[in-house]
Length: 600
Image 1: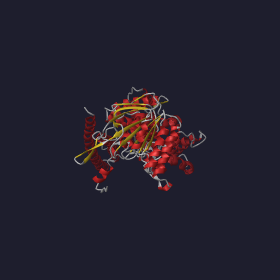
Image 2: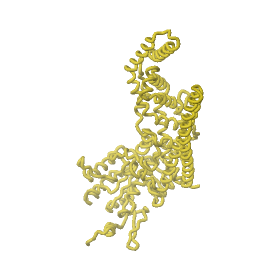
Image 3: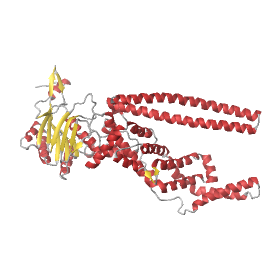
Image 4: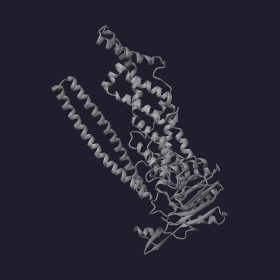
């Protein structure tokens, strides 16, 4: 069974489940309505025709039945939501394979940084980006971790291989990855920063500094209710006693309840997220892993001999207890007689003391599983792609049959290249594929360092910092021209090279914003400055004069090119990289094609 068939079968199954659950949900709605009406009618008739005691008995039976139907109905609604999410998830996997993923909304546009050393030029974030293609994260920390893996991962070889092995196992666990994605979908606020929850959970402050004060909130309600019962039954106590006790409780509420409500309302805003966290944690805890790194991450979810999901469930119950009385009338009654919301805060403080300091690690673990699962999407949708290997050379790439991962396989043209402490000058006519090839190398390196599979038959590389200079534009607000912006970008690359750390640069049409003489002279100077043993690089250019640098470079500078051919008065590109310098141009021909008159 090929990859497409796997996801098509899943899509078909969940579509069938969804249709069945919708029918079931509608039936429960009908039965609930009928039950409610029958309950009203039969209870009223029993009260009228038989008696009060029998009427209450019949009412109790109908209430129990109605509550049962409500609970069952809610379970069906939850299953319907899961099926609906799974339909969307598998549809997106199919769209990834078909190349229709560019419309995905969660594309990381908020992470766009024009000053990043490569992210903008290599389409890492934003519309039709790498992030858009692979992202299956929902939580805030999940997206932050994925962002970090794509723009500044830990490029220690040991850490890369650790991520790579984890991703390889997750790639085989499609159902597991989809369950995690499913439980985070559509949850209100799940993509928002949980810092207020983390700050509160890690804070040691208490509502009352003296622990004995808490006992007052148990004793007072007990005495108040006891005195009311005694007055009602035996009338041996003065009514002033419960009245005074109620006044005391009312004054305490008046003075302190606002502070309690600030905490509880803030926590209540996390209700949906807490429920989602609990379900995701349970999925991770129940999974069987073989990879050491995944087992290590899973072990972070056990604290005080209790799983994180159990401890988060306790927090969820506290929030539900608050919400149960989060109604103006119920809140007044429950707090006036029971100090209900005070007890919610006391329970919350006890939970915080036992589990609060672990919640950050739990959410980071969820985020790491989400991020690694996103990287695994590459292998799940392209199982024939390979995991790169890493060698200990300073600057090296040996790529066979390498393609751009964001280009659909039907249009993608693959190329091979070997770079060993050298700079490659790539010439070629307009639209021949020079810039795309530069991006192909860059984005495959980004994926490799993140721990993912690359679009190649073989990809052996050293670990290098990546620098690019491609999409340079002017900035009117700062008074910076295109040429000056490019100078600043190239200067950044030269300054980075002085650190003597292994690096690769990718420069497209260097100094295109100035005249040809200055451009050629400037480009030659830059290339000679960057021709170092710890630097590899590729530069695309229309300036054939730069190709002469190969002659005296002792193999440090090499020429490659892309070419075109003309057939039936049409231009054709094969997008294949070839050795040596380009010997053709096509600007005049392209101008004629679009209807611009050429005067010799």
